[in-house]
Length: 136
Image (tube, rainbow, N blue to C red; front, side, top):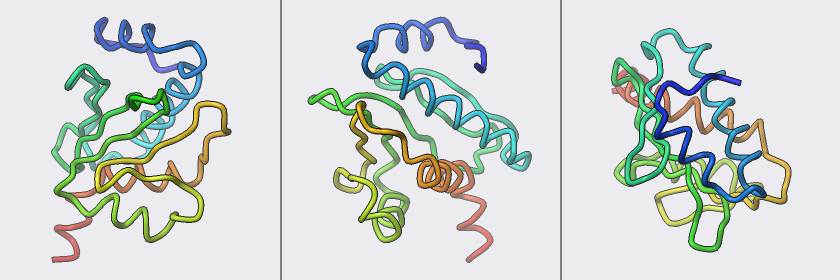
């Protein structure tokens, strides 16, 4: 497991209900794994934003996103609503993922994580600005 560098982030993960912690920590590990494979992003910053773990690239190559829970205790990955990320994900994965508006992906804590789909989505968020600059 990737060590926590911010004790407040670690405390936040520790406060999540036990039935959600495993999946949230697995997603966190996936985020760090994908970031290591993307040297052009300049590293990954983990912090708290609005009380939720937030992930942003050091070189501003990507669009920040957060992990958390919905009001119904489902797992959520929240993306910046002014990006096209969720719209893109919905177009590709509407048969495999659940979405909330233009903000996020919703996952049931009891279901297996859709690793291939999450890998694509996380990589897209981490490289969002690099992709949009390259396509302009």
